Image (cartoon, rainbow, N blue to C red; front, side, top):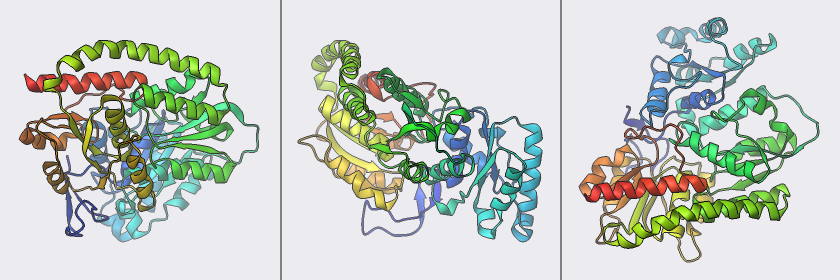
Length: 460
C-alpha cells in the first residue's frame, strides 16, 4: 500500500511545522480514486485515462486493503485504462482514449461509462470532453470527469463524478415532484469502510417513517433508474458534515430542488431519533406515526442495552474513560457525539484527516463545539501521520489505557501506549467487512460489541 503522498495544503495541527514535503501514511487517495464511486453505482463502469498502475493503486488501497470490500461489478481489475505513457505525453492521448472507449463498448456490458482523467492527460491538456461528446452524440451512455491528482483527493473527485452524471446524463426536467421521495447524499463509497451497511441502515430508517429513498450507491441502489429519478424527488438529504453539499446545491440550481443538510450521522437511539424527527418535519410527515416508529426502535434498542449495562457497571475497573478519534469528519463527528452523549466517555483528541475544503472547516469546528449541552471539543485538521501520532502521544488520557478509534496506521502507536484500537476508517487492513454498519440503532449495537470485545480481549 502506498504510504506517501505530496501535500496539497499544510497541516494545521502544529502551526510552526514545515509547510512542504511528503505526507507520511496517507488516509485518502488521489481524485481519480473516485473511479470507485462510479463503480459503486450498479452496472456503471469507470474508464480511466491515466498512467500505468494509477487505477490499480486506487483499487488496492480503497477496496482491498480497506476492509477487503471487493471490486464489485465494474471496479478494481475490471476498470479499462489507457495506461498513458511517454508517447501520450508527447503526442497527446485523445486518440488512445477514443480507441479504448470503442473497445470497452465491445467487451463490457454497462448501463453507463464514466471516464476519469489522471495527471498526465490533465497536464498535457487532452481534450477529453470533445472525445466523450463525440460518443454521446452517437447515443453512447458515457460521461467524463476531470480527476487529475493535483485537483484534490477522492472526496473532491467523488463530487466531480456525481456532478458529471447530473450535468451530462440527466436531461431537463419540469415534471411533478413525487412527495416522499428523497435523494440520499452521504458517505463516500469504499473510502468509508462500512459504507454499504451504513447506507442500508440509513435507508431502512427513512423507509420506516414512510419515505422512499434513492440511495444511489451500493447494493441497495437500483442503479441508473434511481439516478434518472433524481429530479423527481421531493428533496435531497445531505447526511454528512460537507460531502454532498456541492451536489445538492447543483440540484437546487438546476432543478429548483430543495435540500436538507444534517451534518451528524446518527449513531444510537438519541441521535437516530433526532435524525428521524428532523427529516420527518422537513418532509411534512405526520408526527404521530414517526413517533411510533421511534418508540418501536427504542424499545428494541434499549432491550439490548439493558443487558449490556450489567457488564458496563460491573467491569468498570477495566474500561477506558478517555478516547481519541482519528478519521474523516463524518465518522469522527458521529462517533464523538455517540461516545460522549450515550456512553459518557471523555474526548481527549479529535483529528480530522480528509483535508476538507477550507470553506467548510469552521462549520465542522462548530459541530464539534456543540457535541452536547455541556461538552465542547476543539478539533485539529491533519493529514501527516507523523504529526497525528505525536499529537496522540501528548494527549491526556488519564491513568487508564486509552481507546483509539482510527485506522491500521495506529496499530503500532496503540501497542506503544498499551491501549485498544477500533479500526473505523481507511485503511482498515485488519477488518473484513461485508455488510457491517455502525450507524443508526442497529449499527450502534454492533459498534458497542466491537468496542468492548476489543477492550476485554486486550485486558486478558
